[in-house]
Length: 439
Image (tube, rainbow, N blue to C red; front, top):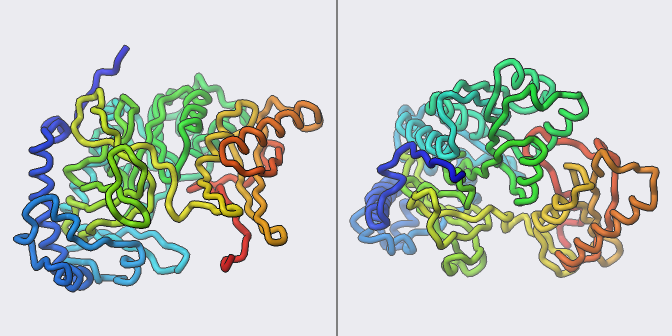
C-alpha cells in the first residue's frame, strides 16, 4: 500500500516552481545585502561588481557571486563572516579539521527557530509524529547533529531521549524501557547496534523500533538495505553539514526516492569539481550551496566537496523541491591507486552486497616499492567458521573477483573474525592511507 504522505508546511513544500524561485530571489537579495556588511565578503563582492541587493536582479546573477570554501572559513576565523553585532549571537557550532582551526558557524535566535523548522519538516516527512519516541544516538555539543535533531524532534512533538553516542548496552535499555520508535545515528553505529543485539541476546521483539535517520557519513544503498533487513526498520537518508546549519538541508520522504533539498532555505548548484561550470541535470558533480535561512552568518556558493546529482523526474509525494541523489563521496575522499581513481563507497557497495560478511571493514592503502597496494579487511558474519579453510578461501576469492570487476584494481582481501576491527561511535574510519603525503 502506498504511504499517505504528510506535510509539515504544505504551502511551502508544494509551491509551484515560479513561486519557489521568486522566494529564493527575495532571500538571495537579503543574503547578498547581509554578506556585503561582512569583513570577508565585502571586498570580494565589490570585486565582482556587486555593491548590494540591487545588483541581484534574477537567480541567474548567482553565478556572479564568488565561491566560498572551507579554507575561507578558517582564514576568516573567528568573526570575519559575522554580519550582526556579537551581542545578538546566541549560539555557535564548530567542527575542527586537520589544521586545528575550527570552522565556526553563528546563529541568532531567529536562525535557531528557522533551523529547527527545517529539521522538523524533515522528520515529519518520513511519517513521524507526536506519538513517536525519538532516541538521538549521536554526539551532542559542538557537533550540529545532536542539538539540531533534538530541537527538531521536540518541535514535531515527539518524546526525545538525548542518549548521545556510545554505550550500546544503555541504548538497548532505553529502547526497551521507553518504547523507542525512532533513532538517529550514523549508519556504521546502526550496524554495530545490530551486532551487539545479537551478541548480548537482546530480543528484537522487546524493542518497538520502526525508523532510523542515518547520516553524517557516506553509505551505500546496500548498507541501507542491510540495516533495514537486520533491524527490521525503515532507514531514511539525511543530509546536512555544519556550514549550512547542520541537519535539515535535505531529507528523504516516505517515498525514499532521493533527498528533498529544502529550496526555500538553500539554493543548490551542481558543478564540475575542476572547471566549476554547471553540469547537466542528472550528471554527478560537486554540490554547491547558498544559505537563505541564516541572518547571523551568510554563506554564498559554498563548495561542499560532496558529490551528488539532481533527480530530473518529480517525486510521487507531490513536493516540488528538487531532490538529490545519495551522496556518493567527497572530492577530497577520492583515492588514486596506481593511477586509478577510486571512491571508498564503490568498495562498500560490493562488500555490503555479500551476505556472508559482517558489518565492519577497513580499506588500507600502503606503498610497496614504487607501487600502491590496496588491502580490504573485512569481518565475516556469524555463520562463517574461520577454521574451515575451503569455504573461507572461496568467499575471499569471490569478493576479490567482484571487487576487481567493480574497481579494476586487484586488491588483497583479508577476512577477519567478528569484532576484530575497531568500532567507531561517531563517524566511522573506513580508510587507512599510510602512503607518504608527498607521493
